[in-house]
Image (cartoon, rainbow, N blue to C red; front, side):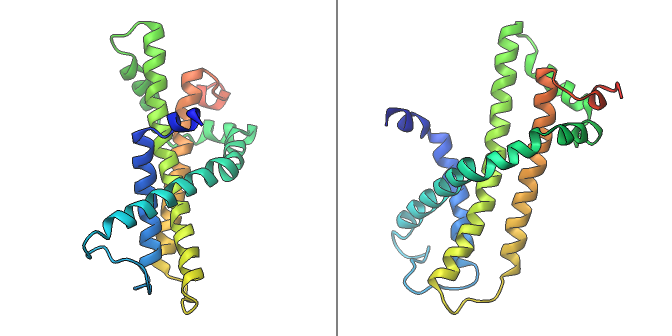
Length: 194
């Protein structure tokens, strides 16, 4: 239980809260929902914030436990590593520049720690995008469950969820390219040896 409490750092909870806000958007965007609090009522922001926090945490946990292992396996495959080598979506000079900038004025061990910390922040932002996309999906599912009259597809929600998922995948692709450069595990194509 102590490990769980330590993992609930303020930054993580804020990311869950913001991801969960997309759950509320997906739940409310199609129109009013009977019995659901409205933001402009006195004190309604407290239960809505708690709902957003729980929804964001749920989306993040489901993503990390069941969906991300599949995405990670796909990104780690030899075919995807080779494809990132030919289509990195981030220029080699940018990758080198980032790693160099993160290392300026530091000894080798300090530079590696700083680079790792910057990569961890990037990874957190990428996971936030994934959790936000899944929060949109969970909100749309909750809406359909709670409102039996809601049968139409709400295209702005589909566009929002799809956009967040595409952004997460692009960010993950670029992040993996930087990690490969950082660890020296680039494909021959990325090193320019192919």
